Amino acid sequence: MVSGRGYGHGVGMSQFGAYGQATAGRTYDEILTYYYTGVELGKAPARPVRVLLAEGRRAVTIGSTAPFTVRDAAGSIFRLPAGQLAIRPDLKITTPDGRVAPVGPIVVRPSKSAPLSLDGRLYRGVLEVASQVPYLRVVNTVGLESYLSGVVPGEMPYTWPLEALKAQAVAARSYALANLLKGKPFDLYADVRSQVYLGAGGEKPRTTEAVEDTAGRVVLYGGRVASTLYHASSGGRTASAADVFGLAAPYLLGKPDPWDKTSPYYRWGPLLFGARTLQARLAIEGRVIDATASGTPSGRVRTVTVQTATGAEIIPASLVRTALGLRSTWLTIGVLRLDRPSSSTVVFGSGTRLSGVAREVAAPALSTSVDGATWRKGGPLPVARAGAVSVDVKPTRSMRYRLEVDGAASPALLVQVSPRLELAVPAEPGVLSGTVRPKSPGSPVTIERRKGEAWIAVGEARVGTGGAFRVELHLVPGSYRARMPANGGLVSALSPTIEVAG
Image 1: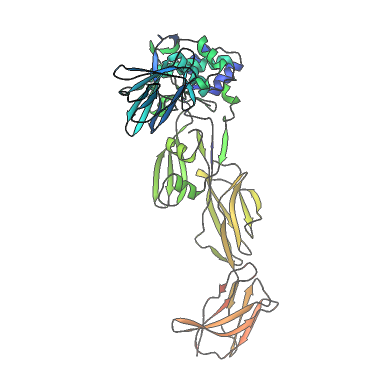
Image 2 (image 1 turned 90 degrees about the vertical axis):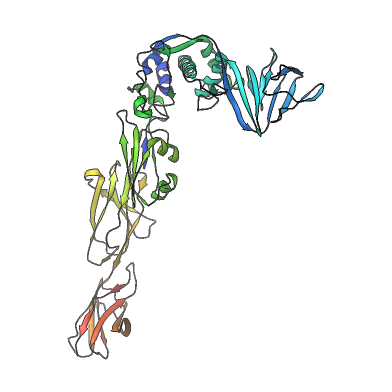
């Protein structure tokens, strides 16, 4: 059972927190200087960026509603009419003068009147297509501000307050400049590996306004552009970069974030995961028995220790989050487990102790069921150290038990009850008698005698109204016992063995 807070890694600016601050009347620079400690806002020079749009593709289609041009690596220019151009790894293109084979890579340039499209999505700037036989790579070279006009609506809802959108624009601009890739033929990815970039097709007037109103503005720390990490929702407190990534940054510190309460992800869960689900998703060998978390000062979890029947495995919280599809690593791991007793069968009139774990859950109770469909919940159980619970039970028939809290329950555990069957040493010749509890009038009782390594039936009786039975038979010296079949919610029973002397 997993509950949590927030959405994302928790470092830097909370987007829902920015929404809350903007709604409260705070300006974008106030929002940014709150989430990024000790920073100041400055200006960065305009520059183009190269954004990877596609790779590993066998074909792409580039087009425009206006005439456009293709220039190859040899300097040849091919003028193309409005329309669509299909490109494959050989880079051959169809021009008004026929089919040609440009020298790669090729650069596709739009006219001033209309942007280019890649597979139907519009992009500003130019598109470079390189052959990586048998695949293609497409990179969009575009001005930084135009790039941001395609990023902000991909990272924050365009309907949000303008000051929140401005904070997002400055954070995105700073993050892009601080995280330009090295040693690659492009500077940025178009997805969450850098920032979500929707191109011109994703632009919205309000987000473009936010970009234009903050043009060139960046977050600086010590005179350098800061790596302004951001995330959807902090859950009420941001995390330090040291807690989450193991790398300290003086401007990425954890701090209270009361404005994040507007987030639908401020608190979430509980989500239920059975032992088999955990074993499969976390690729763990051995049956899962328990799980505990190792936390950080910000409340996030650093590692999860999963205890199995064969040992323990320590798993980074980030991997647990991915494997289980969790929103963040600010986790509370609740365990609800009822352990099987040493004997799963008790004799009528006797009891057994049920033990288990109810950690990080509220008001655990023991529930009972005869058929496994209808459950009856008892009162809250006392919880000892580390979530240990125990309770003595004295069932009068076979019964299912489980630990239960509001919204969740442990797997059911069946405790079987057998009749208390006693066979007496004969008090008169040729007669064996005994008793059954509960009385079970009319139930059959079979008398068995040991013959070598086997037991053979030598007589049968019926239980009387008082719970006693009696059978006359030819007794020979040896070992005897009584047997009863399962009946009325009770499992089959064997009496203790008696010895009949000669």
